[in-house]
Length: 542
Ligand code: F6P
Image 1 (cartoon, rainbow, N blue to C red):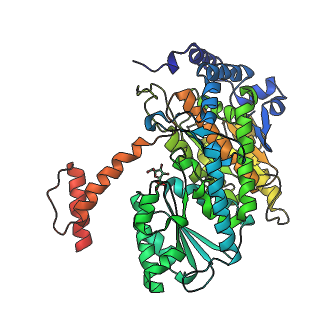
Image 2: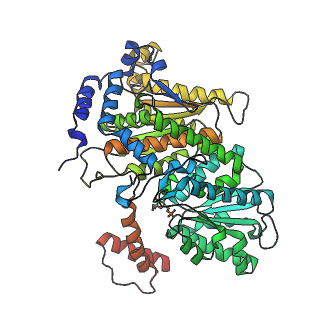
Image 3: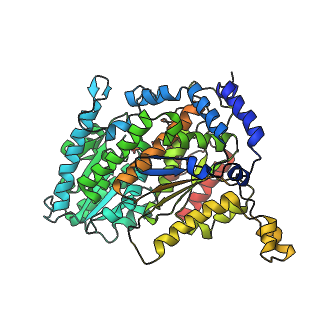
């Protein structure tokens, strides 16, 4: 059985259309339609999207819209907001939109209003955060908290780190936040090196509370805390947990009163606005955290209620499909021209690649088309002095998402206009390039003309907002969450499971036993793994 997508007339129509316009240059498209830079734009919740530098025409958009209708995108969107079990392989809802629904709204899952549950936890988080921030929460020896160490990995780390970095301008500077994720002991050792346990609060973040990296690091942190403070009783004042599994949390030694819950309908990579975001709340405070949730909700409402043709996440998602499947672009560069968004590309990597890195449809049929592209990136302007060369003149097409803000959070005399001038110039250079005639006209010697030409025709989106705030960060996150979902709907995959990560976890547990055994047991791996295990042990034990 072959998957339905490529057999759809709407897909075939896009193929035919690509054959007709695929070789057109953005220079031709702008020449034929000088106003496209004003028209191929959309705006919602304070986010302005310019997609005029995509290699599309009005017909492309119409055909992509028809494909979205054929794939029943509106029905899928409604199903997500309703709390249907759209994560079919895990029989779960994917209800991150409930995490930012205003109090009083109702979404029912298994006979429970989950919005009410969300607000109960949110209020508990706020009370706890106020206690810590005001200094009334005291450590075991009576000291207020000055250091917060969040221990988690994947979705229990990348979202909180990204948000902490993004919102530093809004954070309490007398609270030091650190994030430990890697099972490499260096991560924890360096995080704790200069901290005083008496002033340190640990947040152990793990939805399942089974993740080895997190539990190993939390165990060592606990031992460190108890050793320094001299009593097991210190754990109650220095550890809180965020998890969906109260029993495992209790078994670790953290009392229910110090656990903040989440639910199985919150996916790890969609959880930074749940209790997993406790570190964000501690850093920026309840009011700003609620602003972030409100920004996310504004984008949710836009996504839910706006016709496809004007819907930002839908447009971004469909353009991503166009670039991935018709332009054959295997990756997307995410380029925030905002230093505070330096961890945004890393966060997006999990969001997009764990969601859409799938090789079978929801029905388990092997796809015959490319699914999720590779997301990567760095803040501008740093990338310009490293990998942008390949984007400008390499042989691969790398669609770019430029993200910028009009108002600086740290205004210096000329820096911000310089920063944004660079962002706009990169998009222009990528789209229009510089022809041989233009290069020659600049007096370039003949032998250098080919080297200095930029072909252009490199597609990009530009996202512009007034200012990076908790609210605008929320809109940006929800925009990408929903855009990833749109892509998954078109590709007919389950964007909310992650079975691919399991095999490596299983193999690692066998291998760990073999590495740590006092004497080397009989090895039954392939010859490469067997030899590497022996060599590792030899070098370690030498
Ligand atoms: O291994 C992948 C994963 O399950 C992610 O999806 C998740 O975000 C991460 O591990 C952490 O999981 P947990 O929060 O349960 O520790």
